[in-house]
Length: 220
Image (cartoon, rainbow, N blue to C red):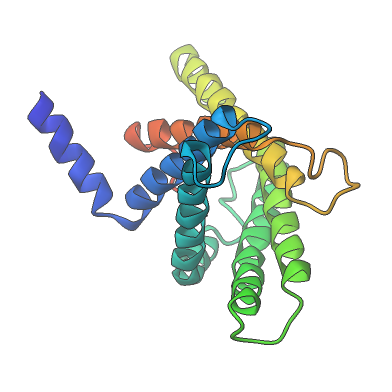
């Protein structure tokens, strides 16, 4: 059984999505631990500071790797199109808007990344805010979106459970997305590092669980 689990882990880490999920969970886990251990007089060279530094490096790694996600998202969006005709009209509309927000998110983040790196001349913060706003919009649309009810009671219970878990992950990510928007909007800028890490860890673990159960397959 241990050998089978190891093979499954290795297989997941050999894929782009599987590796990203692992890096994301480790990134937020380090932020949670570093933020929880940090005190008022914590030194940047101490353990909490080093954990937060690891978290920042892993986050930067994920940002760089997302430079190659545009085509995957475009392929998913084109495959979905305007949605299947037998699906609820409101669900289709929300799904299309969600895909548009996701598609626009990537180039905005790329411009912000390039501006930060000094590759182009642009106001990086403006583009980071725009990309974060698009991510928040995508998450909100995902929360509002509902799928059609299955026929059997067993399928209905399974669907409700899957939707509750998905909404929990999206609410956690949406809370962080709003925190990263400019101060003055709702709770933007008010979360301590440990809370950001906790919310991100929860959504990351849910994402890993969903992947292991053959859940959400969207490119974004």
